[in-house]
Image (cartoon, rainbow, N blue to C red; front, top):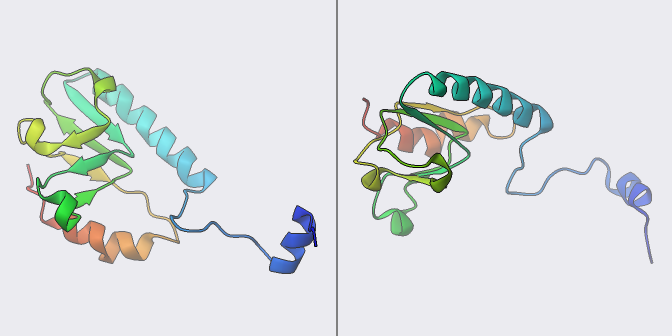
Length: 129
């Protein structure tokens, strides 16, 4: 039997995203607005702003899964590099420079994990500049 999308939607009810949770349009808009503000801030100083980048701070991360993927982060006085060359922030390759600020936008679907789960546990063990 072939079902059209409207017929399938009526049978299944509201369709929700399947893990991994994708960001909502509102979340994407908020992230873009904040990122653009931080890019203007970055242009006035020696800083790097990362968005949705993996942050590797533990050389053993592949074995113990110690890494973060924050929405945004900022590093003051990073090593000179072409920002387009950075797809991941690797602390030990960046002169042991950790982010000076990490920003995570909360959503209903991820707020418990962001406030109480792995991200909070990992973030609290990062050095504080």
